[in-house]
Image 1: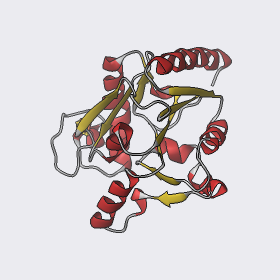
Image 2: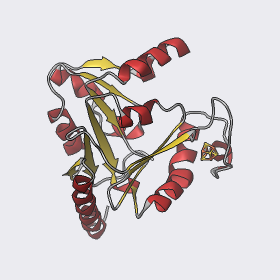
Image 3: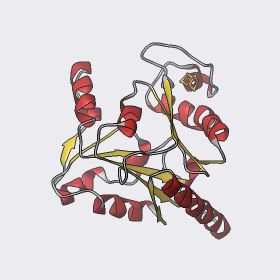
Image 4: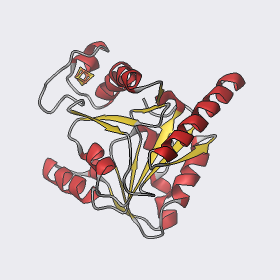
Length: 213
Ligand code: SF4
């Protein structure tokens, strides 16, 4: 990434971090995904139960393989062998000590904007896990809620539907068709996190790199 772009993105991150504080969330800046991984690990108590939602960003920062450093007890909903186990681990994830997630978008004024197919990831953002650590690359920054939704429909959803092999219009054509297809749509619900009423619960690590979709 060109120096000028990195500097501009850093300034945007600093603005977002300031606005997150007003919204009851803690914001942090990291220059790289490696730094972000270290930061997230430092925030996980030793022996904590750790879980996550489906997230390319979490894969991108390579944190899962390093959780043994903090003796984490892992609840992995993505490793379930069948739908019943997947349901059970998703419910257990809501009772984890630490939940790791990306965000589909983050606005300059500090709101997290997320869509979800089944709702387990958005549920964990709302309530349950004692601590939520959100990792956001600068590609997730949007001017406002409207721009956030536009980026989700045009950038995040087509790529995620292709990755998840979903039979949706955006997965087939790259363009949203406002689908309502059982078991396929990844836009069942939209969550805007505009304030956190539990101090020290939601922590957002802004990373000056592109991460996830
Ligand atoms: S509503 Fe359907 S087609 Fe539109 S972005 Fe979401 S999953 Fe894709």
